[in-house]
Each structure stands twice: as C-alpha cells, then as structure tokens.
Length: 256
Image (cartoon, rainbow, N blue to C red; front, side):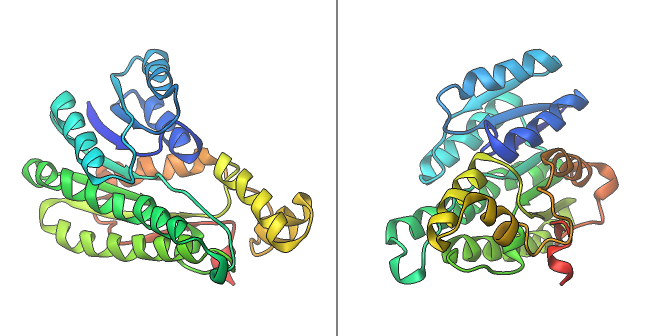
C-alpha cells in the first residue's frame, strides 16, 4: 500500500481528491487541514474505505509545523510515495488596496509550503526511487485576472517550481506535475463569488456568468472528481514519463 500526503484535504478540492484516492483502497492517506473536525473527517474516510489514515493540523503558514507534518507522516507510515500540495487561500482586491499581510499569507500557503514539503519528502523519495509530486495550481497559473495579484503570482510560481523539481527528480523516478483547474464549486470559490460581487458591484449570479465562467468555453464548474481521477493517474506507474507539465482542467479557458 502506498502513502499519499494531501495538504488542505479536510475540505474543498483536497477532500475530493482524498476521497478518490481512498476509493481505490490502495493508499494510506495523511490528511491535513485547519477544520476543527479534521481528525474525525480523516477517521471516517479511513473507516468507510478500510484504509489507514492519520490527520495532522499543521498551519502551513509556519515552516516548523510543515516539517513536523512531513516527519509525522514518514514516522507513521515509513514513506511518502505521493505528495499533493493542494492547500490554498485567496483574497480579491485592487493592487493599491491589497493588504500586505494578505499578500504574505497567500504566498506562504500557496507557494512556500509546497517548497518546504517537497524539500522534506525529497530524501525519502530519492532513496525509494519513486515519487510523485502533484501541485494543485490553477488556470490562474497560466493566465491572469484582475484583483488577484497575490493568487496569480503564487500560482505562476508553483508552475515554475514544478518544472524545476521535475528536472531534478528525473534521475530518481520522481515526477512533478501541476494541475490547473478552472473554477470548482468549493468554499474558497463561494467566498470569491461574494468578494467579486463587492469588487465589481454586481450580483452573485452575474459574477458566476459574467466573471467566473465567462472565459470558459464549457459554462460549468469543474467537478472535483475529475481532478481526483487526474491526480490518481499522475500518481500511477503509467505516468512515469509525464513530468514538468501544467495540465489545464478549465473548460477550455486557456484555449482562447
């Protein structure tokens, strides 16, 4: 049985991806998140699918907690085969009003935490000659939108980081890829709908149709199950030669 560590996996996209991995019954899962009932979420999924799970409540703002998350996972399961850097936060604001502390937090959680965790699990992956690092970027890692300076910067950065570690990992059968979703109906996106409505002075319905899904050819939110299935494929032996990519799952947004 392989081990997967997924950050931000007690809600939203991360939880959806964790559930897809759990369904295979081929992975023991390290859950992470800030939800107060995170341990219960992890235990319930473990019970439902009869797989080992643990929960670690590391706040990814802090490197010492990130390293403790990695060390706990390795001590518990002896290895990390798949690392999915999924945790992310967002803030919508014109650049001249963008709070400094929001910029710092977004870069720390969306970008720097992926560096710290990759660094922490790298020696184990090198030793076992197998590793799959999957970074959940965004369509905003490939294109920009107004009022999202920190988020867009962090997601462009994670794609650059992905390419770098793909090159470094190739001699050791460690691949690194980024998944770039369009809008997925998660608590993060629900909050963005509210923030965008305020920023643009329009209704929530108009935000969805005229802002969020406007650039997508397929006018639908991305199903989280699709992201989970793609992550499963990238984690598999079949994906050995797929590395250094940024794969859009965005309803055709980037086809323009």
